[in-house]
Length: 270
Image 1: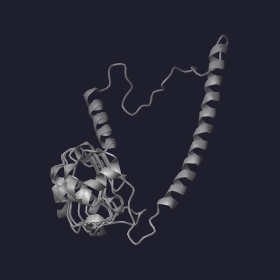
Image 2: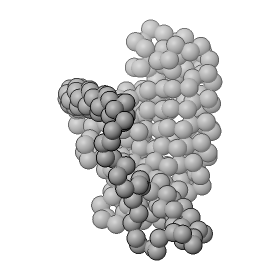
Image 3: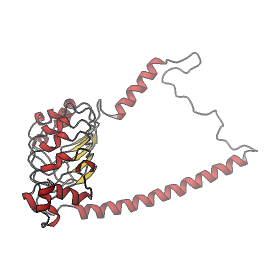
Image 4: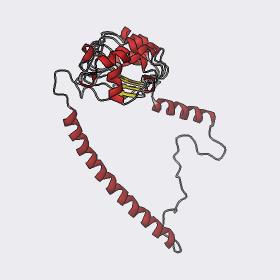
């Protein structure tokens, strides 16, 4: 691959060489790394790639963005056992089989491909760490044929019960944090019934004694502390509102700048 990279040296960034194939030269120029097995993060978005070439040599890769290309298969990714985050949205994939061996995969964005049925996701069933899966991205107007069914999210959840987020929305079943929290709370309540001095079930008890909040003589120090706490809270709230306004403006500008202008939009969500 080194010799091939030297031959392509006259072509800008190695991106125009090898007809849309990932080369060692392209990877080194994109990352500044001399050794492919030392690359941890890689963004190859919108380069017109059709072949992943030597990408499988990046064995330490943990974060990979291949969105907005023309990929039809992911074979070289089968050896990336450290890969945790992958974006392959807006490509031409009909299957995800090579990902079955990516044991560390936690987040996958495959919106905007040609995944036609639930069987195309069966290869992900053995990925115990996979928690986030995106097959549809309304903002970028990306989807898959299997998303045409209104019940597809439920079917995906049944196939991959470890998922916590599907298409950016939390799963309401076994994979959700809320479900786990409620289940643990129910278990605790069942284990510890009301004691001899406890109120009967369903009777709400106050958190503090009656009169706790009343102003009494000799509590001026407490009152001044409370006033100061209220003032600090109001200041913090005002600052949060200002930060929220600034964030909304920044996100709006970013969305306008990142909105794809070509025929094939890309998803920037992981």
